[in-house]
Amino acid sequence: MSGIGKGIATSSIGKILQARGYRVTALKIDPYINVDAGTMNPVEHGEVFVTTDGMECDQDMGNYERFLEEDMHAYNYMTTGAVYLSVITKERNLEFGGKCVEVVPHVPEEVLQRITFAAKKTAADFVLIEIGGTVGEYQNLLFLEAGRMLKLQNPDHVLFVMVSYFPIPRMIGEMKTKPTQYAVRSLNTAGIQPDIILARSAVPLDKPRKQKVSVFCNMQEQDVISAPDVSSIYEVPINFEKEGLGDRLLEKFHIPVRKKKNMTAWIERVRQARAVKKPIKIGIVGKYFGTGAFTLSDSYISVIEALKHAAWAEKRDPELHWLNAEEYEQDPKALWSLRDFDGIVVPGGFGSRGVEGKIRVIEFCRKNTIPYLGLCYGMHLAVVEFARNVAHMEGAHTTEVDPKTKYPVIDVLPEQKENIATKHMGGSMRLGSYACKLQQGTKAYSAYGAPRIKERHRHRYELNNTLRERLTKKGLVISGINLERNLVEIIELPDHPFFVATQFHPEFQSRFLNPHPLFLAFVQASIKKESKN
Image: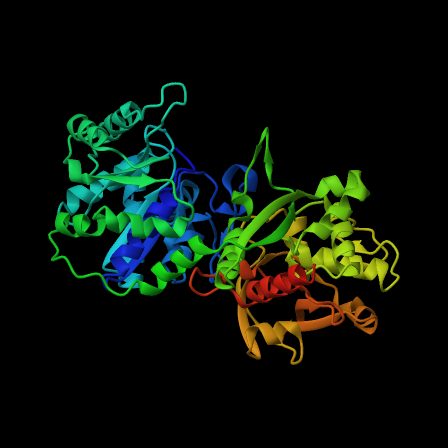
């Protein structure tokens, strides 16, 4: 089922193979008709991750990058929609030579072509393919069929790893294997027998449970690998190694087992993260948290991980709090609770809901010298707040929310106007990695320690250059610019401990062992604020 850690399992397997000196790449298959993840609801599906080449994709691609410490690309991701679109386009172009184009085998064959292309492009020794969804669902049957065909064509070069949940009903207090038995049976109906089962549960599997799974799922006991809950996802590769997963995979591939290479830095950072006791309290102000009676954080997973990376590097325990922007619209007095936080982040987003609440939060951070980091929409609204309350541009706004504002300090990019008018929305934003020149003497320059950087974007709106001079005359500092198009990439306030906001999404490039410079600078400023308190 979703959310049990298929992406983390894939990333962790990649990490332990990588640690043996093998080159690894990973592919994510999403069983949605959406052509990419850009049009998916972030509450239902989670964060939209963006690759350097501009692919809007599933959040698991971010996990692959954070674990493997390598950039993923458009060819590392596919959806049902993208596969069907490609097959239909080929049919329209007569590339099937007059054949009757059928769901099977032509759709699975397209999947296999994409897998082969990614393998060749990356020159990988191992290609890890994560099939999204749940075994038994109609949506991913074609991808399971592709997997079956791949195994048939390359019997010694394909293994199936199944991630399955082992519940412990509270009223019983015993771990149950029956859901996994049924899941394996469902997989068998697709012509696939799992070679390895990763047993996700609150606790490690005991021997009786492993024996039971071995008997009823037609596999050896040593192929049932415990995957218990851990305090940090970065512990998972270490746990898999303790279970002997890396050796077992190589044995099944008939590859001589290589000695583990140096994972010292990874293990040391995990140990450091476990050991930290002193907290740093960060508030994240958003609107993609609630789904019914539950609060989810998947919409901002890269932001969360980037904050953790930076906090752990500074030997602090990241204490993250979800703050609903709409609450500050309904009750302005609630703003005073922000003084309890060491730093505030306003991440990306779209639309008008909660906007005025975010603007009030930004104003409070500016006036009360609370470290502030704005990301994409968090930059837009920081500019709006500054324009209204410092530059005296009454009613200033982003045209995304108020198209008729007198002061459109944030306006749609020229090329995006036609996209919006013609409703050409999917995959049409300013996407991917772009260059940025930093202004010396600014906090951004100090954080990066370099004059030029490249960061990933996902937006249609930008700071309006026609009003830029009026803002800078009132003290807004433009600390980063894209020279090719003279677009503002970073803004900051010079008379504030840390008030920095970016048009791009720095969270996408943060790594476990290499925290992003801006997040690191933000955490350092938040620690200083906490010390003063």
